[in-house]
Figure 1: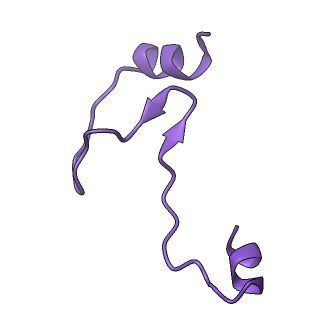
Figure 2: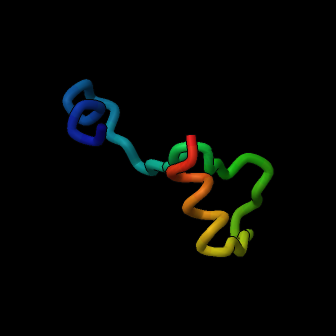
Length: 48
């Protein structure tokens, strides 16, 4: 992504991963932390 945007003359200054599978940062503020058990994490990532 960074190389592609830099090639067009618009370098990427900040890149944020918004979502991984069904886990998102929706509703979170900078500095927020969400604790999850291992089971909750695996269910969100691998349970379809």
